[in-house]
Amino acid sequence: MIAQYIANGLLIGSLYACLAVGFSLIYGVLNIINVMHGSFVVLGAYITIYCSQYFGISPLLSALIGCLVLFVFGYLTQRFLINEVVAAPIFISFTLTFGLDLLLNNAMIQAFTATPRSLIVDYGSVTMAGVTLPIARLGAMVLALALTGLLYWLLRHSQMGRAIIAVRMDRHAAALLGIRVPRIYAITFGIGALMAAAAGGAMAVVYPITPLLSTVFLGKSFVICVLGGLGSVPGALVGGLALGLLESFGAVAFGSQWSVTVGFALMILVLVLRPSGLAGRKGFE
Amino acid sequence: MSGGSQALLWRGLVAAGLIAAVSAFGLSANNYLLQAGTTLAMSAVLCLAWNVVGGFMGYPSFATAAFFGLGAYIGGIVQNQDGPMALAWIAAAAGGMIFAALLGSILLGLRGHYFAIGTIAVVEVMREIANNWEQLTGGAIGMNIPILAGSPRAAGLFFYFAMWMLVVIAFAATALIANSKFGFGLRCIRQNENAAKMVGIDVFRFKVAAFVISGLIVSTAGAVYASMVAFIEPKDVFNVLLSIEVPVMVMLGGAGTVVGPLVGAALYVVLRELVWVNFINFHSAILGIIIIAVIYLVPKGVLREFHAVIRSKLGARPVGLGKG
View 1 (cartoon, rainbow over the protein chains, first blue to last red):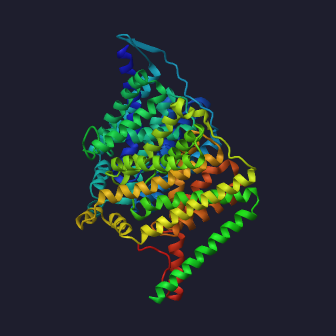
View 2 (spheres, rainbow over the protein chains, first blue to last red):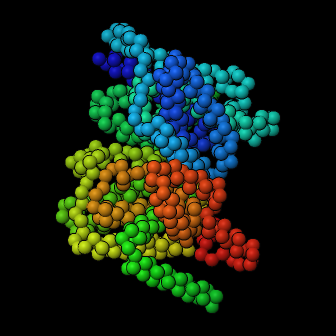
């Protein structure tokens, strides 16, 4: 029984890691809290659901289409709207993304209605050592972990990734080295949106999705990033898995209606006691 | 000296004129306008309270809804125990003060994004507590509160004047703070907290004191609101949108000034009433557009823009603006 809780926690935790890593990247590089992140997740989920259920495209390919669309959307949003306030005090950029989120979310409710939809894929399930897991969920978990790992690798080894890290460390020095900072900002924002879309596609397998869930996803991103430490990929992974396990066991200990409260309460505790996060590392090393 | 007393006289006259206008409006308005006037007063109170922490001190607080909801529930619970309304409001003020002192001493150690996230999380946690602690709050179904005796018209007028009394109190507090050493200390903290510490300002006590003043005013407004609407529910009073709307209103008028919050609240409420009536399905989208427009068009507030225009045309000195 405990093994099943752990398995469930790790499974949902991997999705959480994918959910938070884009949020964390944008925070780290642009120093902006992207309130639209939750709506990006929902939008990615909807694109995946529509492509796969109305056009008959395979779920994996649908999720990748969602990623692509959101990357372009994120890139353009940053380039033309958010870049204007990137150097403004945090309150300004925070409020701006909040305003944009209200607009995006209202549009989604009008377009998709608030009815929950899910991505129904049935590939059967596997049982191992008394733990039962549906294969579709395992697939979602693998997709989430693979993309998170790929992002980590690209940041370390690709030229673009090195440029992103350089901008994160010192944007003035990066500009002197010939890196086009506004372009890096836009690409980073696009990658953040892409990761949100991937998380959305994976989430659609596990939860029914509605535009009203966007604040829930945003809240979870907050909690995960604070638990793991804002602004690093390993931090998001640690925070995501920690929150997944916490919710899985917290639901047993306190009842599932308290899971949000437990998460946020823990977050405030970590904020106050260990502001650098449980992993305690800074930056994208 | 005579210039100073003349300015004081002018301000007194303006204040008296405004009070007369507000009273005349309340007494002559129909029910819809009376309601709108009360909403305006409530927004102004919340803006003035936020301005102490977010404007003078420069801490991006999103805790407004936490204090508002706390006050509403304390007031509601006291009234449901057959406590008189005045006691309910006083209890809410005291509760807000204590909660602000506790929360402030924990959260004000954080800076920037971390402070912003922490304050939002407090709103979320409090809403969930109100949702789940059914014996005390009635849970997600909400809580009924005894209605004020008398005709609806008389009750409406009573709450209209009660809210405007709060505006007067909050405005007086803001004006006092702006011209005191305390206000100067808060502005120092906004400019550079470490430097403020170095020149001998007790930064921690200043920050907590500002947070307490702000929290006290907001939770009192929450209790008055609860008595007025006679029904509260967690998603209504602990609404994160409220936490965002208030700073946007202040920004619209001019954060860190004395009159800015009032001007911002008035402009915002009028704008909202005019636009929302026509687009009922797009509430939040329109709020979003207003936010985006404020940030791009008047990031420093209409008051400062207005003064800049006046100054460039007449070379006159701005009146009523705090330093900074």
